[in-house]
Amino acid sequence: LLFDSIDSLAIEVDETPVYKFLMGACRFCKTKSLSGCVTVTSGVHSPRFLSMIKSLFEGVIQLKLEESATGIRRFLRVHTLRGAAHPTEFFPFEITDDGILIGTQEYRSKLPASHSGPHFFKFTAAYSKT
Image (tube, rainbow, N blue to C red; front, side, top):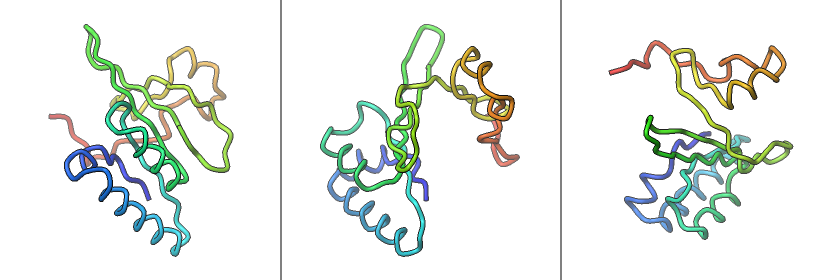
């Protein structure tokens, strides 16, 4: 189960009720042998709330946006992924017509062929640009 993203909910409702809701959702997931993952944006939540979220979910993906003269630069990192060794630094990503490209071109060029393409996420026909 993926919550993408809890930012608006936590800002609009407040962090404590959102945490209680997510705790209930995670308990339900565990009864169904499901795993939970959540995306959060850096700088939006209190450190206390982030710590509580990290303790609930098997996976936490942290997003960061930086504005520059050329537009918005997007970054992500896998903050937590229980049971898997992974790098924890931020990687740039781009949203393209072919999918989501993670890492710089230099980084992607060093990956094995099976990992170098935008095959992790594909937009469907339901995705349309406006």
